[in-house]
Image (tube, rainbow, N blue to C red; front, side, top):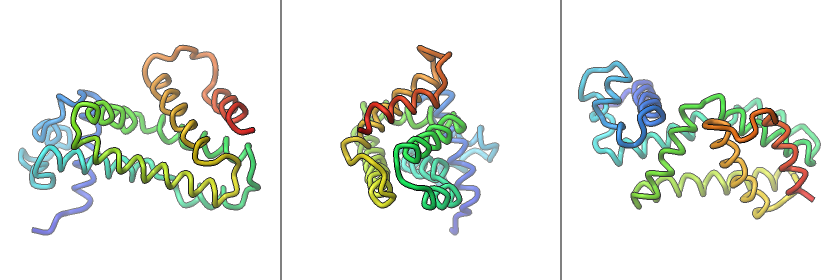
Length: 188
């Protein structure tokens, strides 16, 4: 049977919503069917097992969080330097905060990966590919900092997002200010 890619994305989006709102324990095929407003059993037709569903969710997170071609083109025509790097980070944080359910679902998957090696394997491969892509982008764009600095930014941005999407410790300080301070502190 040929699968409908649009319906597969709709189901995966519903799965991300369930995961973000109910946590890992609430993520069932039936719950996704309900959230997607599709007949019972539809999710299992597209994602046969829980592992297949989790794999599909990781794939969909990548699709939803990818920068637009326009964003990439705009950055390609801007002079390299700390300001461009800060702009790049602000864009990443913007995408992650605007698509709150996706980011919360990603955090849920990371926690699940801490308990289940098979989830860690899928998510880890995706994360490492994204990290390698960030390092390659940074190098190709002539931006300051190398692999180590990019890793430090990943650690910092993960913490910043967890803070901003849950209970901020300093809600008066803008996210842009935090990013500017991170760039100033980590890029010498």
